[in-house]
Image (cartoon, rainbow over the protein chains, first blue to last red):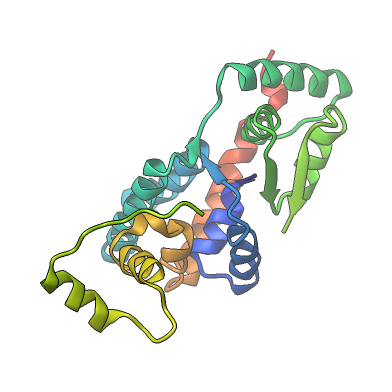
Amino acid sequence: MFLLDTNIIIAILRGKQEIVKKYQRISSKSQPIYLTTYTITEIYIGFEDQEYKQQNLEKLNIQKKLFDKMINFLEAQKRIISLDLEGAKILGKLLYQLKIKGNIIPFIDAIIAAIGISRNLTIITSDKNHFNAIKTVNDKLVVEFW
Amino acid sequence: MTQKTISLNEKSYKMLKKLKKENESYSDLIIRLCSMQDPFLKDPLLEFSGIFSDDNDLWEEIESLIKTYRSSYLTNNIE
């Protein structure tokens, strides 16, 4: 079972062939593949920024509609997940351990890691540094770097 | 595998027969037809792959913005 980070979702939606091929391989294994609500938040920051700047509005509007349609399908398949009670406890431990070790990482990376650990998911991301830093404080984290 | 029996009227049977490919079972035919109609049976991420592909600069900019946002909220900010 897998959990895709935002950078992987965007790469798939941008049609980056190397990533799409890797995704097709795991998708064909019929194992659940999830994304988090935080990825949707991040992509919406991008939409909002372009709307605020009044840039690429026509194109962006189409892309946003397609993205919304896609996430509705994913939601219907129960593939969009968030931090639950168990994840919240793990996150607390992670944040404390990272602080003790003096490792500074983005908060969202820690949340995604906690979701992955709590649900036994393999996280797929392109972000080696931060997720490797989390592994130093919790060896239950399983990550694949694409 | 468990088998289920369904009844069809003459008209729907003929329509299915027309659509059935050589060496395709009726079960496989129904799965193929349902997959064409129902995106829930497919993987939406693959179905929608490439929807952001027609403007490289735009998505480079958005990705860079997302990285900036992520880096703005660091674990050491939490006291």
